[in-house]
Length: 351
Image 1: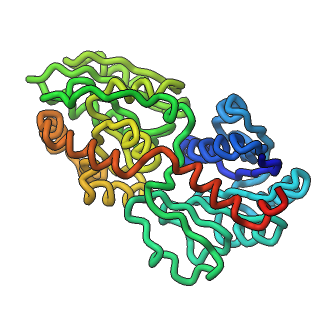
Image 2: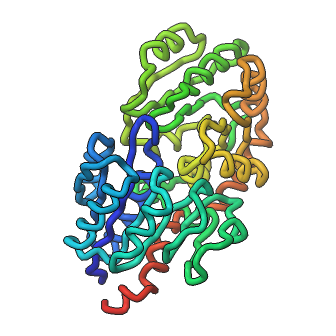
């Protein structure tokens, strides 16, 4: 059994979102299942500390601006004190010189990536779960670096892996719509979707809207839901996302880690891009017919978005195809595959 420490450096906030930390929780769970210890280093004022602790990991605080040299110096001290043999860095606010500072410490460095980092990378392991991730993107990266690319390495949290049930037959018309754009949704794409769905007046829909604790627009969202001709419910900072996914006929969401959770749960996806680091994953999933990619939120007017949503809601064949292709991509063993690779490195030889 593993006896070593994993240190994760990541953050979650209204601006950053929660996806980086949430997928690192999945990786930490797989590490702990092998008997290891997991510590998360978070900048002060960041979110999800309670969630991390509830999942069995420890939390320490960084008293510095995220991504700065002082942040790296404090993280290096934590590394030394914890004797962590692996450190994981996940977030686009950590520049290449930050990686280099951590690379100089003892142990190994893993970078979680979605194609937005500044190349070349200097690390032991790169994990990029995007379905179009390619080794050719990483030109100039150290030749000893190993790459785990594609959805088979998508880390899923335990709550999803323990929630697998037989999905019901795809309905002729999708009625139960799940709408979720992550922890912050700083552009309020959630309201944009509600306004578009409210234009669809000849269908009776059941809308479940999920927002995070850092969502700033609840009052105007509540007003839009109260005026809706559909059945609606608004949920904040939920802990039962797998349950909500299992009952959905269609999910309207952004690109990123949620897509791989939905693919595993066999839920057809309607994607709206709201951040540059989600664009490639949305395009790849759309090209693979594993999701319907509507494109950037800023390019969608209300009537066009309403018509696209109506088309997917009413197309049973398309939604069945999306589910089948998505399920082939993600089998739920991504985090385990990453940990198995980590154990092949030098620090595992002492076990």
